[in-house]
Image (cartoon, rainbow, N blue to C red):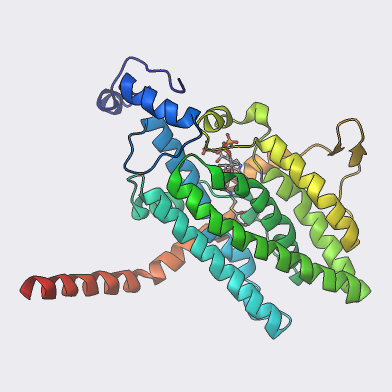
Length: 336
Ligand code: 3HC
């Protein structure tokens, strides 16, 4: 059994304003557990415990918010890309992120939550989105480093989500991961060109960007397993497949050889191959800085939210026009 029934009902706990988990019907709970035990898929029409639904809404909506807020740091460079080729690649990438946001909002909607309510939570600062998008993109090299490291970390974290127990999320992630691979490759290739063919100033710019983004990318995987309140349950439910710490380690192990090919170093004096463990050891992450950023006090949190809120307001006429058009179509159909 993955959820322990307690002594209340959803209506009673909602009325009392408590967080006590609702009682779930034991036969339904057993059927659900059997699917999870067999590594099967839960689909929107299937019965599922309230806590499972709530966890999915939380994770998928945070993920969707991360994708659309994630368009901002790089979108900032579209008008300043150094060539037509780089501009076209960057445009395609930023549009992909918008698409990812849309698939993910749609996947969350299958759980019975409205897009308006998810966006309202983002716009009022109640919803989380990835810490990584609250840092500034100071130079063109940041765009390459975001592709290589941020999208590289995203692939590491998101590939296991293609096997998530909730069908719509797992299926959305297949396409997202394919597109993230292109994002990672374009970033790495752009850095490779700067490192192998660029001037000393361009090479220094790449190293500076790596220095600023490295630790933020390691923190992006989330708190250490010992301090991750959602991991245990998420893993039992087959939502999360690999723990925050294990993904972080895999990312470091995969990335250090890539850094060597590029000819950059990472800003970690403690980084060392550990023969016994078969992994790189790395230094401590500044979790105070991570939590300050997650809680709204990173360098760009306010700017990012203000930009999203403005974009929502600017798009109001499009939503109004779409609603009016749908209404007209309905009226025509009824009249016919
Ligand atoms: N930024 C902001 N909040 C974070 C975070 C991060 N990097 N890492 C963890 N947190 C939050 C969690 O959301 C959770 O908050 P909540 O309980 O209030 O919702 C809290 O910190 C504790 O963390 P847990 O480890 O217990 O939480 P999870 O088990 O949910 O794990 C996660 C966190 C690994 C981010 C997981 O939710 C996940 O895999 N999510 C899906 C992937 C995702 O959202 N990635 C975001 C980046 S998307 C992206 O990078 C776009 C691409 O185009 C680059």
